[in-house]
Amino acid sequence: MSSLLDASEITYEEQVVWLEDLGTLDYVRQALDKTPRRNTKPRYARDGRMIGYAVLDDDAEPDPDSGLYRRRVFFLLPHDRDSQPHGPYAVGAPGEAIDPRTIEPRNPGAKTDRSQGRTAIASATP
Image (cartoon, rainbow, N blue to C red; front, side):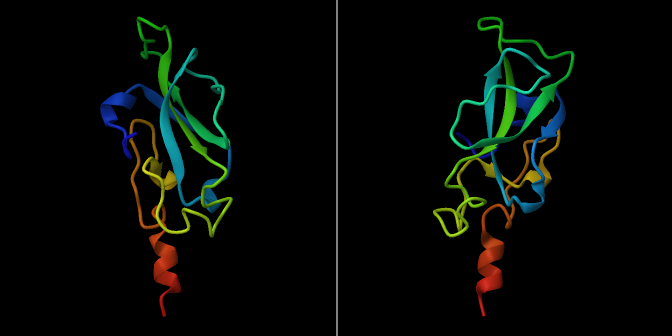
C-alpha cells in the first residue's frame, strides 16, 4: 500500500472520528476499507485495534458492483511503536504510517519526524 493515499480517493469525507486520544500516538496506519455503510463505525477485522475512521458525506455513492463504500480506517498493530517502544518501529515506521495530527477530512495526512521516529533519535544523540 502506498504510504499516502491520493486526495482524489477521499473526496467524500465529511468527518474523522477518533476512538482514542491521539496525544500518545506518534503514528497511525491508514487503509481504505470497503464498508456497507458510509457513516457508522465500520467492522474491524485486523490484528491490533482501530484508532479511528472516516465518515462520508451524503454525496458519497457506493461502488456500483459491490454496493460498498470505500472509507479510511486508522489502526495500529500489536508490534507498533505505541505497544512496543523498543520493537521493530522504535526508529522508522511502516509505509502506511502517518502522523495523526496531520489528518483531516479529505486530507491524506503526512509523514513527520515524529511519525517516522526521528525525534527519538535526535533526543538520544549527545
